[in-house]
Length: 115
Length: 112
Image (cartoon, rainbow over all chains, first blue to last red; front, side, top):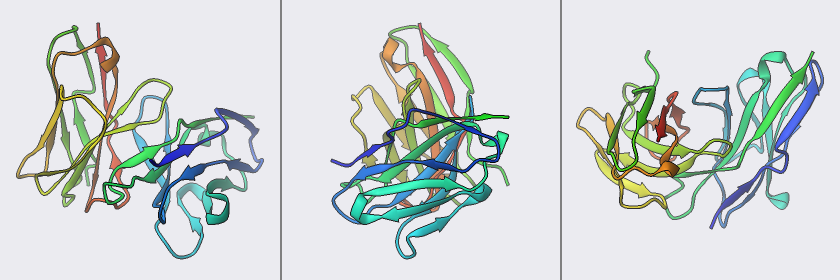
């Protein structure tokens, strides 16, 4: 069965510093990969997605992610973090057995931004 | 354009009761999915509907059921509520299954 691991439960960075959030997946075929962000009490907002093609994916709010098949990773990056980026970030993979229709989410990484 | 709308936003129910949650997808979106997010965890897939047919079901008991209407809105029903059903229930819509999903703000269900 597919799975997603986000090794970092909580990360704190200073405003203006660079950010990398890690995501590792287990999936038998070519995965559909997603990054979502969730502010407190809110739903999920799609940051970016990877289906195929260029392994470096650009998203909204200045985020990007790189798909590395050899490492089964899809890490999220941002060159300069803003205080408004503080939120919970979820990596997700399209699940096998449902035509990749169902998403399997990681447990999330909470980002705190220090002034 | 309105995003994915869910109602109610908050709900308190007693153990053993039944609950119905509602979702209206983005206009033009024909696929609706339901997810359960327990506090401190990532969302878990419950159901997906496309063109009014169930296209996927997660590992949830039969107490959970759903349906999609001709206007593509959807209901999630949970019978015989347990304390463990307390969670944020998220609805997501997309043009077609497998595309990037747009999530609503969710319904916070508390079972007491």
